[in-house]
Length: 75
Image 1 (tube, rainbow, N blue to C red):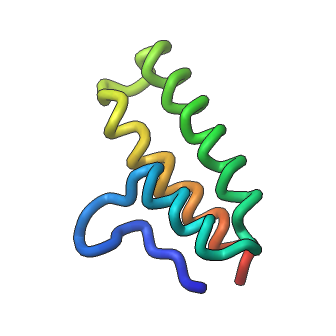
Image 2 (image 1 turned 120 degrees about the vertical axis):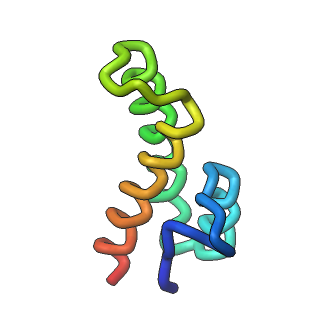
């Protein structure tokens, strides 16, 4: 299964990510861990104000990172 960071020209949200994990049991556990760290990183970056981005933008960036990470592991 190939994972792409963008589906139908829209950024992939956490919920799309979770639905993909339910569709493919092999990456289900990894996706749940990724969602947890996704939220954690977004909260930390948003609180520390390292980047001048809002919460949603941070989630999109961390989604992209974890899609790349899981693609690397699966392939």
